[in-house]
Length: 492
Ligand code: B12
Ligand code: SF4
Image (cartoon, rainbow, N blue to C red; front, top):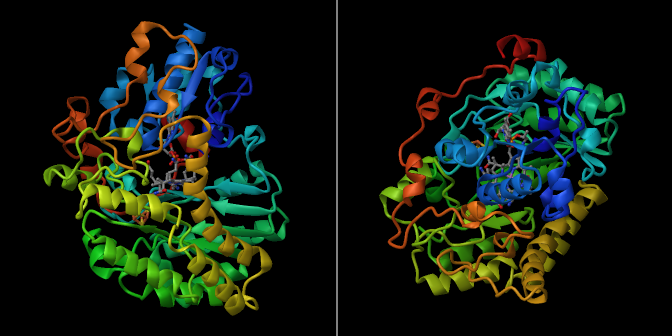
């Protein structure tokens, strides 16, 4: 959603185009890359290298281009980023207006920022908006904990304007990290507004991401269901309580996850979640037992994704891994994607890599997943709608398809099969320039290394060794509403 919001920083004087590589594949058209005066990049932490490729392409295609980058990777690596981008932004989306004003003059920056859903060609019948930023919890592995920003909810009027800018959609999904938050009054007011907007016909159903504490009070489920909510995503991460304790995910310890998921489903709200397979602290046998339990329990949904632990830069978990010298040698930033081993596992690397390859395609579990889906559908056919049941069944299908599709694509394009181990993983074709770029751009196509051949922090990443000042000063969770567009104008 970053591009949609960032596009709103430009005044109507500017011609803005969006390109989403997640939806449209690699951007390699030199004409398109040479078209803008300003190239604005955003992405998750492991897309840092991709931002470098696009910078090299942009500068080759248009030597006068100004390249601006922001997002989690830039926040974690502000000093390194300054070497590559004209503007390396560590602030929120609003910072782009200051950048535009600085580069072109104030009249090119928008007076008021409104998301440009009209440019988001990849969005179908599901609209996305956010009602809050950051999170009021501090799980050790989460990039938001590393960033240390305070949880803030949008003023109601701003939220209303976002939905109006989105236009009428079949479904609305809130991309907040935590739609619930720490301020119950704000939560209640936002749900009331959502209910009103639904009655006004902007969408027919909606979903959101919430933390476990949302389920502590039964009224919360009743309230959101009454407002038209049909899907909730919550980070279960693991059914192992000791693991949750170690990850500081204490909010997940109060209730059994099975009871909580069942309660949600029985309230006619589909429950989605992901599981972290921590091969660093747990045995393969132990993880298999957990998966056996999940596919053998038709009362709960299957996970929407399975992931290895990701020591995202600048998180407490990242530093813990550094201190324990737990990183594998030659760890690449691009491999911090949840499907590649970057940490020393408890059992031999080869065995764990085979486990990862199998599990990401649900090999050994497919029939049981299918049986689970059938029993799940039978159990919930009177409480969940057909769309919700299809979504639940789709989880199993997606899990199976992911590994299979990747393998087939690799085979079809002659890419060697994946090893799932960062030290030996072959770089994908993105690291070979799609067209000729100047030799001074050579570094832009080299992978950013997290560790060296000995498994120690790569010198380039020295800045992530100690906690950033922001995470120290903002460590306490607080509720501090986002500025209204008017206030934002005054402060900039
Ligand atoms: C939508 C989403 C997805 C989508 C799309 C991902 C994508 N590649 O675009 C899907 C479902 C595919 C997905 C998958 C994953 N996701 Co996800 N996802 C989100 C989600 C819900 C919303 C992100 C969003 O668009 N926010 C709205 C935009 C406007 O804000 P933002 O991106 O946070 O940016 C803020 C700042 O960084 C800054 N900013 C960003 N860019 C720029 C640029 C400029 C110029 C400026 C000035 C500022 C700026 O401004 C914003 C605040 O105002 C977030 C949770 C959240 N609410 O943030 C998680 C989140 C981003 N995902 C996360 C993770 C871990 C994953 C997975 C790795 C999960 C997994 N283990 O498989 C995968 C990775 C897949 C991949 N390779 O892309 C993590 C962090 C990732 C990270 N730091 O790298 C997050 C934060 C969730 C969490 N709390 O753990 N995800
Ligand atoms: S509850 Fe979710 S978003 Fe909040 S810190 Fe934990 S993992 Fe991050």
